[in-house]
Image 1 (tube, rainbow, N blue to C red):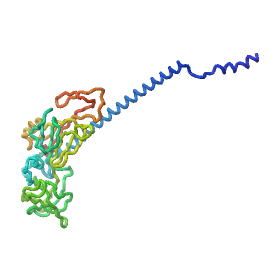
Image 2 (tube, rainbow, N blue to C red; image 1 turned 120 degrees about the horizontal axis):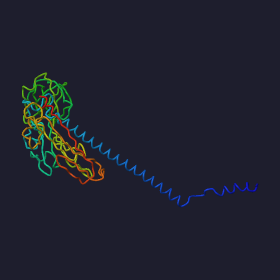
Image 3 (cartoon, rainbow, N blue to C red; image 1 turned 45 degrees about the vertical axis):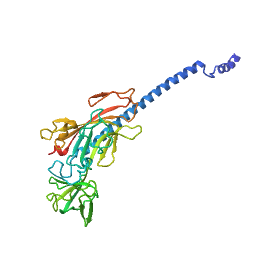
Image 4 (cartoon, rainbow, N blue to C red; image 1 turned 135 degrees about the horizontal axis):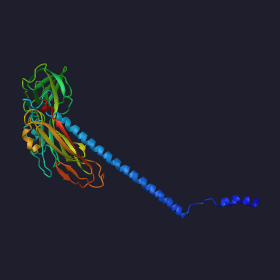
Length: 362
C-alpha cells in the first residue's frame, strides 16, 4: 500500500503537456488568420470612409470659399464709394479708348459683364477680346466685375479747396499711391474716375495730381467737372479695377481645372482648385421694379448689361481632389447634361444666387 502511494507522483508527472500536435497548431493558425483578416477589413474600410469624408469636406469647403470670394465682388459691382455706376453723373477721365484690350480693363461705365460658351465650343459670346483673359477653359462661362478693389469703403476725406487744373486737394487721408486708378465720389451721386500721376503732401494736405497722358492707361483729360467737388465736401476715394472670374487649367501635376481671378493687367491667380465647370445666368429686371423677372445666359442678355441685371446665379461643378474614392466611375448631371467620367472622383453641384446691391436698392 505504501509502495502504491509513493508511485502516484511519478505517474502524474508523466502526464504533463510538453507541446502542441500538428492539428492543434494548424487550427490555431487558421483562427489567427481569420481574426487578422477581419481586423484588416475593418481597418481598410475605416481608412476608405475617412478618405471619402475628408475629400467631401474639402470639396464643400472649396465651393463655399469660391462663392464667398466671387460674392464679395459681385454684390458690390459698380460701387464707387457714395454712388454706383448707374448714376448719370459718372465722369470717367481715363484714356481707355486706345484699343479694345484697354477699353475692357478700364470701361467702368459697365459694372458687370458676362461671356457664354456652350459645351464643346471654343468661342465665347459676346466675342472675348484677345489678351484680356488668359487661357480660359472652353465650355465654361466668364464673369467680369468692375468696381472697388476691396470692401473696406475706400478713403474718406474732406476737400481742402475746389479743384484747379489737374489737382484735387484733400485733407490727408492716406493709403493712396501714385499710379492708383481711383473713383472719387462727393456722396451726391457724382463720381469722377482718374489715375493719380503724383501725390504732393504739404502741412496735412494731399494734392492728388492727375495730369493728362501720364501713366497706364493714363488720363485723357486733367479736368474734373467743376460741379463735382467743392471746398469742405466730404468725399470717398477708392481704388478700383476690373476683375474676371473664370475656369482654366492649373499648373499642378497632374493639371486640373480650377477657378482663377484676373485683376486688371495683373497675371491671373488661382483662387480655388477642384472647380471643374462654371455656368452663370443673369437675373433680368424687365419691368424696372428691382426684382428678377427672368434668368438668362450671357449671350441672350448681353444687351441689358447697362442696368437691367439685378442678380447673378452661379452653378459650380466641383470634384474631389483625390481619385479612386468610388469603386467605379460615378455618373453626374450638370447644366442639363448627364456625363460618365473616366475617373473615380466624387462630384457635387453647388449653386448660389447673388444680388447686385447697387441695382436692387434703388
